Length: 443
Picture 1 (tube, one colour):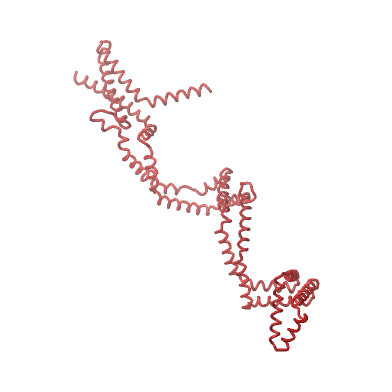
Picture 2 (picture 1 turned 45 degrees about the horizontal axis):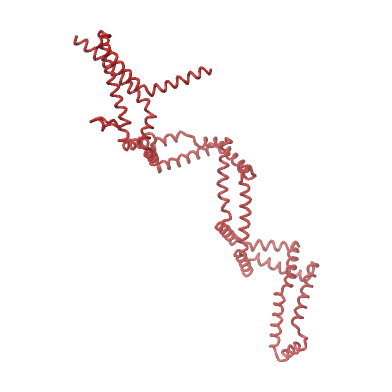
């Protein structure tokens, strides 16, 4: 077997060499035959009509082989001969015409719009594409492409423009939503079902906390001063009583403030521990009244809710919240898009495989995809068909003269050698025929 393979390689090598050199060989045989027969005839070694006819055949074969050698060589090279030299190097001299001829041939014959459209009509592209996608290697490539697209999208999630878009979209949705009626129903149900105590406890705790703030104390003191000033303005006796009280220490604004704050703290502490406390009942009654106004669409209450919504939407902390949410989402998604083995990519792969299978079983949908793809490709062909010619033209123009000639030689050079062989053979046969005709008709 090894010997057989080696023999085949050797035969193929000699066949290739013989094929590329057969023109030269035919010319050498014709010239060698002419020299040998002519020398033999003139020296008397070869006598008789046969040798003269054979010599004439070799002579005509030499002329034919030389003529065809010149013709083939003139295609690729410049031959410096008088008169005929300007008609050589034909490919290089006419490469512009050849280029445009090839472009026209490709665009109007081989790859014309009509031919491409005809070929597309008989091709079921969608079925083949989805069949290819089912192969593990192609599915992996598809997942890589999907992951790349998603990663590029996720990369800009915390962009200020995206944050602004999300915030504005949230604002529009919140502004459109009527929260007054459902909020009123929810608040009423919470109070009636006694599920609001945690909210009230929170309000009382916040109120108690606010009483310890210096601003609260300053506010109460300012209110007390204004009350006393208003009281003094009522008449002379009240003004005198206030003056005497301040002078004797009977009216001490700091002491009154402390007493009021203490009483408020005691009341809040009592209300926190006693759910039947009058203060809690007042709060419950106020919450129920607010719930009724919300459900009935009271104008002042709705205006108050709208004001709260606008202030909340305009709050800088809201933008910071959106930024933080988007950054956390971006980080989580980037982690899931780090490879094809994550939970997210496994989920996408399962869904994609299921979708591909469902589409393959839906012949009607496949036909729709086919029609869409063919129509889209047809539109692209009609729009960019001239680019086919441009690509061919640019490819040819990129080649220098030597490279162009070399490429043509590589493609048709061996076949042109047979033209030279045919010239030698046909020339020899014609020479023999002429010699025979001369012999028959003249002697």
